[in-house]
Length: 58
Image (tube, rainbow, N blue to C red; front, side, top):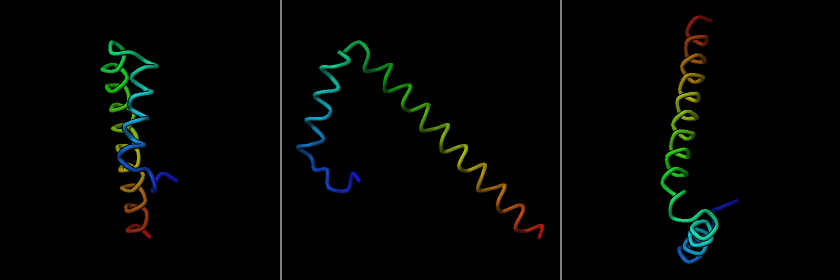
């Protein structure tokens, strides 16, 4: 879906986000986005470990 996004398109998207949220909200937005990505990765890692445990037990 996002394979064809180039540098110019990414800059335009970032500019629109900057205008929409403003400079004061961007650090908070980035922090929350980072937390969400971290939680998602941890959940995926946990699921992968559970699957590995069940496959070893079978």
